[in-house]
Image 1: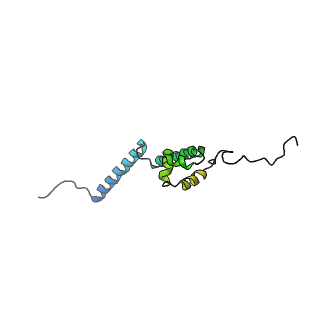
Image 2 (image 1 turned 90 degrees about the vertical axis):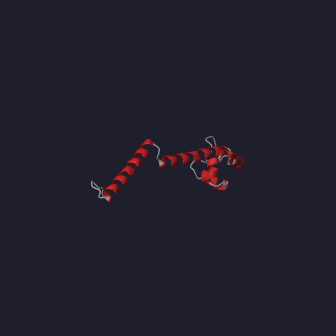
Image 3 (image 1 turned 45 degrees about the vertical axis):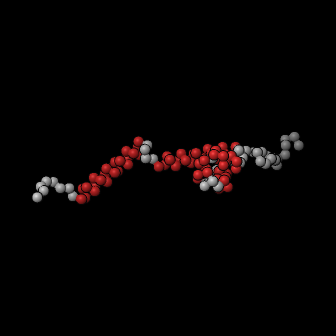
Length: 113
């Protein structure tokens, strides 16, 4: 049996397949279904929120292991030391002034002396 008709070359088929894949990725990207950068930003924001809450509890290991820091626990494999290093490495993540140490004293003379 001899087939007659128009045949597509392999190059044409490959170009069509690639075009459909590119179109699908573009549609998924603009609909928000496929956005890898947003997921990374969301998880980083959640880690920072947990660091701030943990800081208010003075980096208590009881607070860390009580389920309040689930994102930090999973990110650092339940290693409170590494999680604390991460949290204190963030700008402004130090414990509040006077929480664990007395506030610094001024080296400037007072105006009346």
